Length: 153
Image (cartoon, rainbow, N blue to C red; front, side, top):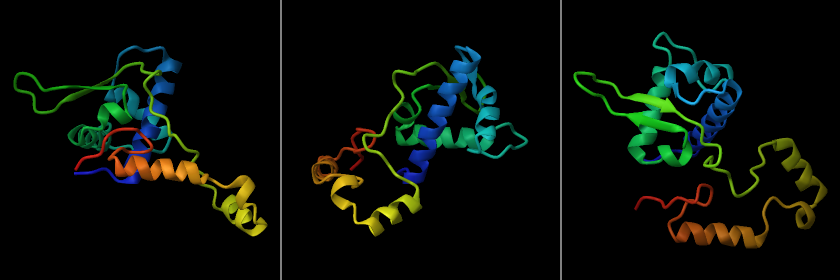
C-alpha cells in the first residue's frame, strides 16, 4: 500500500498544524482527541461523532506504510493493551524533525499562466535543469525527492 501525493501533502499539513497547536497550548503530551478540533478548524478533516475516527484511520494508514514517523514525527502510537481493540495516538513536540520540501511548489495557477505569457522562462523558472536532474537521480536511486526517504520496491 502506497500513499498518494495528496495523502503526503495532507500528512505534512497535519504535522505543521499539530506542531503549531503544541507550541500555542504549551502541552507536552496530547491525545488524538485533543488535537482533532484544531485539525477540523484548519479544514483538514470534518467533525464526526467519534471525535476523529477518520483522522485515526489516516494515522493507522500512515503507520502501516511506515511513513508515520517521517511525515508526522510528533505522533507516537501506543499499541492496545489488555482487552482493548484500538491503539492510542499521542503527540509530542518535534519542531526539529518536521519534514520540509526541498523545492518550492507553486500552486497558484494564475502566476504560472502569467509566467508563460510573459516568456520569463530563463529568469523565473520554477526549477533549473540542475534541480530537475537531481530529482531524476534521486528517483532512480529509489529516494523520495521531497522527504528524502527510500521508496518501497
